[in-house]
Image 1 (cartoon, rainbow, N blue to C red):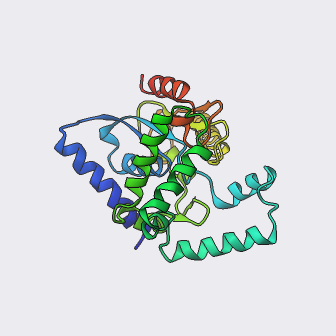
Image 2: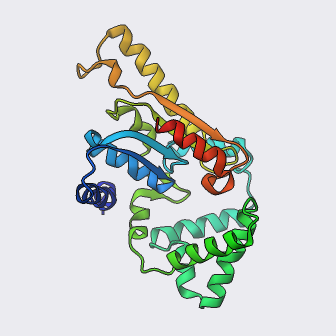
Image 3: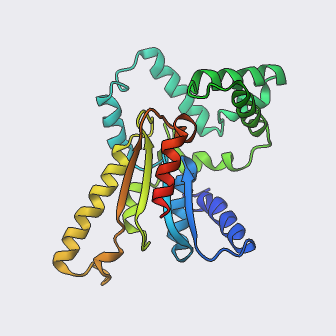
Length: 256
């Protein structure tokens, strides 16, 4: 299955939802893989997107540039053991094995314990026991549902969450009238330099086109999108859970 066909699985579903709900134009936001799909939707149906908000989107940078950034952060100097783990994970990814498969093969007790342990370890910002229990229940029940969209993941992404068709080349070509906002957590494993590089590319394109007054296809430089990048402090990839107050403020500002 091609990248385009896999993207269409999600994009066409979203478009059908929009039609059935009678929404002409919407503020479209997506987190992680949802951010990637939001860009793909905006490419196909720009007339229905009022504003685009990308929340720690996957697949922005090129693989080579992202790997260089990880090496600079010390993630590239891994042991032989971890290189073997990465190789094994890469093979499993090629064979359509996703992390959610683990939850489906475990007993209910072990599966729930695994998810509960993940929430406690990964989200220390959630201190309410009731919230921890509710979130664990939500995550567990979603993880054991029959596989659907996850079967398209390895058609769109390479191992390590690199896009086969990176957004860095696609976002600057979007025809949206309002600024595009990209939001990252301060400790996000999605490298924020990807979003900053998209902003730099769009700024440079606007400078060049303002001198020529036209792009190569004859369109005004005004159609090159403006990019805003927000960084949420004390948050990682799950920024809406780790610092919900600043996250909410950022999304409200982006939607104004």
